[in-house]
Image 1: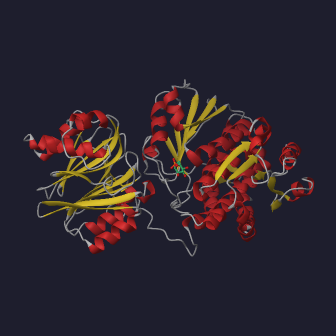
Image 2 (image 1 turned 135 degrees about the horizontal axis):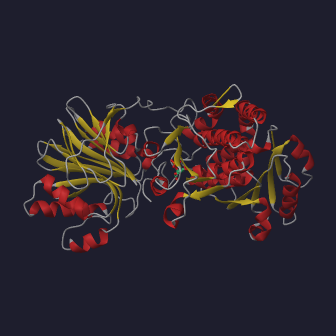
Image 3 (image 1 turned 135 degrees about the vertical axis):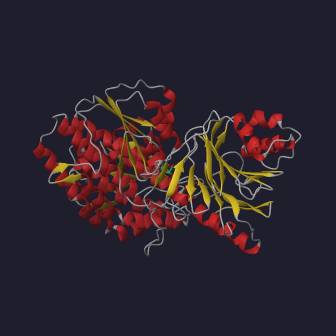
Amino acid sequence: MCGIVGVLGHHEVAPILVEALKRLEYRGYDSAGIATVEDGRLDRRRAVGKLVNLSDLLVHDPLAGKSGIGHTRWATHGAPTEANAHPHRAGRVAVVHNGIIENFRELRADLSGRPFESETDTETIAQLCERHMEAGMSPREAAVATLGALEGAFALAFLFEGENDLIVAARKGSPLAIGHGDGEMYVGSDAIALGPLTDRITYLEEGDYAFVTRDGAEIHDARGRLANREMRTIAPQAAQVDKAGHRHFMAKEIFEQPVVLSTALAAYSSAGQVTLPEGDLDFSNTDRVTMVACGTASYACAIAKYWFEQLAGLPCDVDIASEYRYREPPVSPASTALFVSQSGETADTLAALRYARGKAGRILSIVNVPESSIARESDLALPILAGVEVGVASTKAFMNQLAVLAHLAILAGRQKGHIDPTREAELLADLARLPALLNQALALDPKIAKRTGKLAEARSVLFLGRGPMYPMALEGALKLKEISYIHAEGYASGELKHGPIALVDKTVPVVVLAPRDALFDKTVSNMQEVLAREGRVWLITDATGAQEAGDGVWQTLVMPEINPIFAPMLYAVPAQLIAYHTALHKGTDVDQPRNLAKSVTVE
Ligand code: G6P
């Protein structure tokens, strides 16, 4: 899973490619590389690690040329070494690739004897294409013949020795955009990559390939027929964001939450009623909601399940996209399928959406990137309006996913007659209080910073919660492992005694997320079970809860009072800050933690 870019320009392309790759680093940062053609000569530079290493290399060893392709990598086949970095080259062909070639072993066996340099699936593409050219095919013919042999998911850009004015681009399974400039043309994994270069974009469709020259793009469909694909003018892409005085993007994004949440609340409600920023939604004939997502977005869905059930009386399934897509679940036409994704590009979520298309009554998505593939393939795409999220660990997007989901559950509740307009207005008033409460929670930051020193020494941390705080506990554990690399698990408080309690001893901190709600007494009993085994409990609760919790807890963090149904939104803040400060103590790379990527565009 990776980001790819291509430019046929009038100026030196190396700096343009590197700039575009910066905007694609959210897709991976294990290595980066570019290839250019200068006076017909194909050459490349590649470097392991973050893009900055490639920039440094180019300072000492520049690469000239006005045509080029580039790549930022999240390693799938082969370790993140220079030899495995893209572009891959065989003779006169260089290739950058996002995706996985599933039949690469067979292809490679068929190409045995050729001088392979890497362990990647991608190099087989370059070798195959070069072999076709050695057999007398033109670059265009060779690329098309190569595409015909590939199985799996890919977005590709080919560059050829001797061809100053040609990139062959292809898409199957992984998105690819073509950008139109003035006498220049671009190729990119998404519109964000091309944002500062052009606002005129053509998205390739499934199976399309294109011969891109400075004059334009000749697009063919999967059967080789000339295809007419719409050129869209897209909204200007947000400028590269800065850290606004924070040490990390993640900190900035955590502290932005009261503001971005206010934006979402304003867009989704008015005068005590849920409104939508665009489109109409009618849940009255829906008998089931199925929500599908990955990672943090899937925990937002798991929290929203409580809301759809309690506020709308709607049966609700939550699925991890990678499981849903292959399980062949029956999908009723009376159901609404809801796909949640910050990036809108997550491969498994997109594939799950395609599975549900034509089966579910309606395909909804909740995304942060309105131009994304998931948004474009939905009947209705609802924006979370969180602004660009840079930190790999999702924070403000999670908050606003919850905000949009809460509004949908309330809307469904009213439309299904499960709640009346008065209750709707009360719930919206509860949500409207949240930005101020988030600010109060953020004011606990210095306290949390001080207390995480001990957490950073732990080898393992448990997070517990009940009701909608259970998925919040899962999210708290995910945040901690993502950025501090400490093993962490989230459990339903009541489930602790069925196994996980075996892990508890005085070295294992147990973070309990427990507002004083109807089930609080039961959670206190679960805490006592931990304390009886010398476990160190960090209780996060409100003032009433702190009073009623009894003695023995290791430390207590007192949060503002809130309607318990929306407590996960408030308690997300301390969970995020715990992860952030623990990571600072450990000295990890907070914004770009090892082995992760912001958007996972391979399955
Ligand atoms: C990656 C990110 C997670 C994110 C997940 C889903 O794993 O590291 O932070 O939650 O993908 O991403 P999406 O863009 O679909 O919300």
